[in-house]
Image (cartoon, rainbow, N blue to C red; front, top):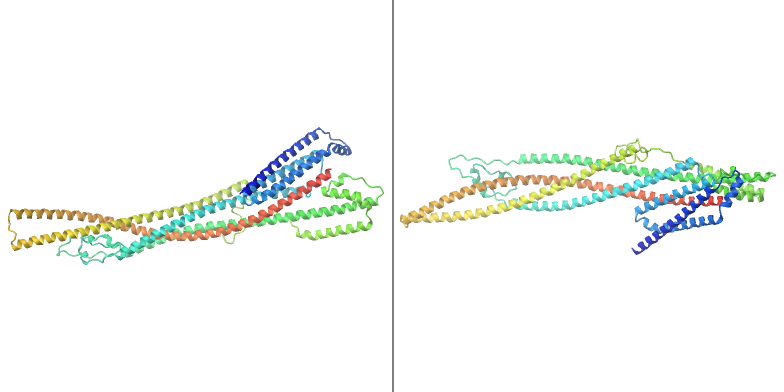
Length: 613
């Protein structure tokens, strides 16, 4: 960290130094502009050249060269300091590249203004149209690079969000699975502990509906919910269980869930196909732009070599022509106006030294240049200037069946802002659809969690109710046994004559009758309580059956959705890895191209300064 902070402090100091040097350079340029405004344009060319030489003092030019050299050295040092940190900070790299591009554009503008004001005219290495076209292509490639970087960052942010949501879903799935295992264990325990049915239950008038659900444990309390019919009344058979209806409802639920899963699977596959087509289009566009850039570089180098070879041949021819003539012709600026700064320098040196060349040396140089020109003619077939074509549009993609150039990259090749805006809106709608699907999946998981919590609460209530019913049954049986024993004792004493009827016995009998009446009222109250408990148990059983169906359906949906999410995430990771690899390769190539352009610009500036001096 200390080394990083030291390097950043050095970089900031270098940047401040560069700004100071740029300010001094701008001050010198303003002084030059003021002096040029005070000058008058002479009519004679020689007077103009002498005036420029008299005005451009050596001190000013040396000072300008020193400032430029220090600016270049400080920029090189700053670049060396910043290079280790470029890979760790993409934003800083983009800012540095944009600042370098802006400074380069400003420097070229200032140089062009100085050339126009000083009257210096020399042709560029390329024609004006080709140079403008090349600059436009470089700017379009830089814009495309920025757009691709921004889209990659967006994809990474979306991927992180999706990974977080998937992790939450997996944790929720684990918790739900644990709850489901606990509920299954409880269900197995309660099902194994349920007693068999008693044959006396067939004499009940209205059997409890709880007998229709096999998972609920059978209690003997339900058989005494209504008073037993007398022996003379006809007995009713028990109602058959509705197993077939339960199976039909379960199959219907499963069919509906399968249809919903198919629809969701189709939406996910469509989104995956869209992402696949987008990644293919991005890779195709990257490869196409890389090929175009390499072809343009090859054409540029070929043009420069051809221009240099033909300029050398023209220089030799002019020198030979002057040697053959008796009087040497003066050096005219109109002829040299079609050469660049490097060719002017070579022609000036050749004019001063060609008079001493012999015929053999002249023929040897001419033969070497002709061989070079012949080799360049042979290499002409390998040079190809790319044309503006749309290779991706109008063809169906082999895996998606959609137009290859109809999404995401269709607006990059068009200059119409309306089409670009429409494409961006279409992309926004697609992203919103995907986000809505994710929200629906999250809502589904929340509903599943709530249903499992409700089922757990219902099972707890069912267990507590069963325990209370068992306790009440035990107490009732104990009370019945004690009362029956007391009644039998009194009857035995009455039959044996031990108890003579008297006022005391009559009081005891009245007490017994009051006790029996209270017992009857208690029985009626217990019957009403049993009916209420039966109704509650029926509701609990239906709710538990619905909860089980919902849990099974949600688990099936969850497994399907998790499988689709895993496959989509895997493919998305692979696509992102391929795109990142292509982006790094393109970034390295762009850096090398920028370095080459800077070197060529420095060489041209050096040659221009020499020609001006």
